[in-house]
Amino acid sequence: MTCITCNIHSGQFAAEKNYKRFLNNLNVLIENRMIKKIKNSNQNSPFLEEEYVCTQCQQVWLLVVPDQAFRGRWNAKR
Image 1 (spheres, rainbow, N blue to C red):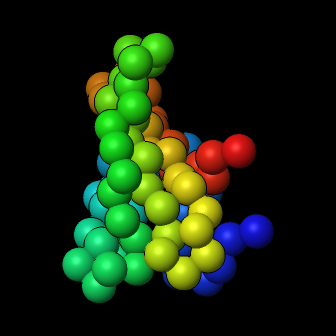
Image 2 (cartoon, rainbow, N blue to C red; image 1 turned 90 degrees about the vertical axis):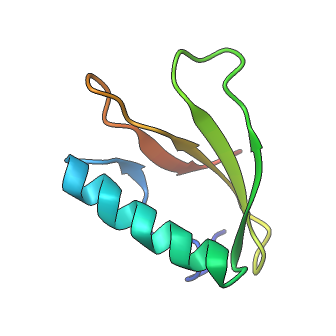
């Protein structure tokens, strides 16, 4: 279960403007120490993947950074 802090987006980004808006929101949460980057984890993926943890509820999140042919996504990690 995620809290209101880290529930800033779920799933793929429909367009670049959605990703940029998400990234701005994520950076604010990082600056306020509400979400913390824990590692890059793209060992088995052709895309850049970054893991984050919510400091409020401890939910781990995976950000797959979009590229030209892939929309990227933000999902809770199981």
